[in-house]
Amino acid sequence: MILVYDIGTSLIKGALFDRDAALIDHFEIPAALLENEDPLFHEQDPEAWINAIKEINKRIVNSLHGNIDGVVISGNGPTLLPADVDGKPLTPAISWMDKRCSTESDIIKEITGSYIDSTFYLPKAYWLFKHRPDVYEKTKYFFSCPEYINFLLTGNAATILPGKHFLKYFWTDDILNRLGLDPGRFPGFIKPGSMVGRVTGKGMSLFGLKKGIPVIAGGPDFVMSILGTGTVFPGRACDRAGTSEGINLCSERMITDSRLLSYGHIIDGYYNISGIISTTGKAMEWFKNITGREKLNYNRIFADISGIAAGSGKLIFLPYLAGERAPVWDDNARGSFIGLTVNHGLNEMTHAVLESTGYAIRHVIEVMEENGVSMQELRITGSPAKSPLWNQIKANITGKRILVPLLIDSELLGDFCLALYGLGEYDNLAAAAEEIVKIRDVYYPDPDSEKIYSEYFQLYKDAYVSLKDLFRDLSGIR
Image (cartoon, rainbow, N blue to C red; front, top):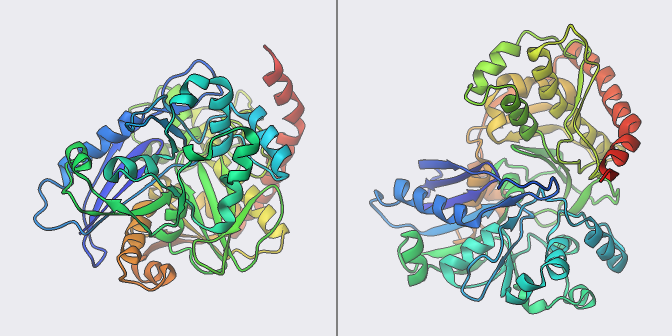
């Protein structure tokens, strides 16, 4: 048996697979960001990660009759947590959505000469160094969420680096020294699939797992989604849909466009061209909640809007509720409805929010294709993949066929692929993913809707350009 976990922003999931990739059991627990009056601060409670994994183990491990051969953990990134010498958190975890570190990222850009987003790991550590020296001095190690759980299980500290081309998004000793940071507080790098260690007596007491179980390095959730959707050959792209959205294209070559992230693929010899969109599923959740439908099932909401025509009655929504990353990289960007009239109601507005996710994805794809890389398909994963309406809208807006895997919790399936690779059952990860990942449904673009959406997509882009300076001025008000 293989036990896997994924620590997400809105859900913490666990699953048990047998060695033939059959899903034996699965359980998930809701998660949430901490409330904060500062709109730039987005934090999570690491104790919630621990408690969720304990609960998952009670549900799916304690009744297990048989041995667990390996454990793999993935999680949202780049989330950063400072921990003391005993492994206790010193602050809440600074999540991937946090926007407080713009000044720190600018300083790092000057030193490195390359773009470092304020949400990445190093600006967060540098912010703690500058603004919370009391915390920094007590910090034994900085961890991402899966690395922290690995440490609690094994007692071994390690930073999971998916590949050498990812280094510019992490750190080097030289950069740390130039910033005045202690390299000893940043655990050494290991690759996904490496052995982190084995469950210790302390890990057994904390999580209820047997002592001695191998713990294999997982990594960032988006990397596991790439594996778990079979996005392991050029032309395939993974649409990792959830609170945010990540488009990851497998390519035979790297590109240098600063609007996208480009680095080595987890499959040696290929490259991952990536565009991260800040709030897509989060935008739907936000609109659902502020319109008094917190307890209403999404299926009911989608049924209510299924008859709305493409374009939502000439209404456009910009989903920039926490700034925006790719391709505009604008921390000041704001969410906006464009074109509201008295003829618009709740259903048209909901439909416009849903369409905005497709426009945001197409914006990323457009920049990719401007750089000469080819995309044939989007393999979608995450809770939004459960919605036929959402999948079809994405196909119609992007003009790409949408493939839905049999198991849409691709992070968990990617963890499983990595476990078998780490345990020596496959010679390479591409072979593991290609054999294990199965496709359930395919959605094809509707030509008529695609033509309509092309016109709205241009207006979507124009709306941001027109409002960009206004967003900046709004953010500047104190």
